Image 1 (cartoon, helix red, strand yellow):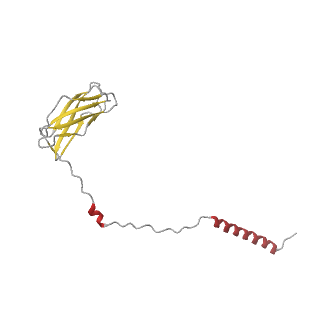
Image 2: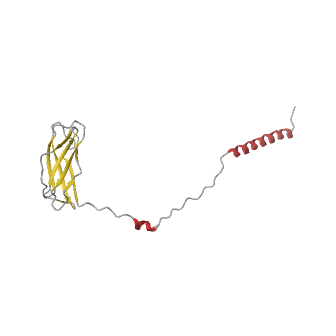
Image 3: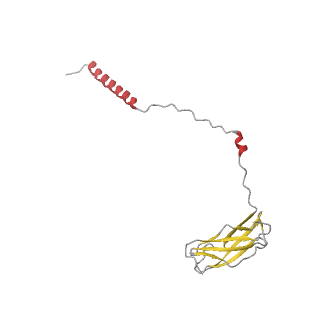
Length: 163
């Protein structure tokens, strides 16, 4: 049996209508569009710059210590250096003492050198296997009798790690 042209068009129209209805239903399930709110405006008070804190002052007296070899053998003899400065210039005539912090305990060095014209002192340190391999040790150096300066000043420590 042959269908008429109108029957074939009716089926096609029905399928088109169903497809359109399906698309409308799918679009209704999608995300809703949200309107974006404008970004906040940041305002900096010009008085902010006037209220900054002052820069810290650099201390006039400073000192630091270092080892001649940071990776010596456990039986090596190394030198510990230290320098004392006032306004970046070496200070002479100050007495230095040093304490080595081995893993087994602290050992004060018996030497008490006096700083030279450049503010330098040095200590001889025989390690004598007192520090295990791969274990760091530090050395604190303190200056006393500083001409015109503080009663004492402890330096940043020296360090070494036997290899």
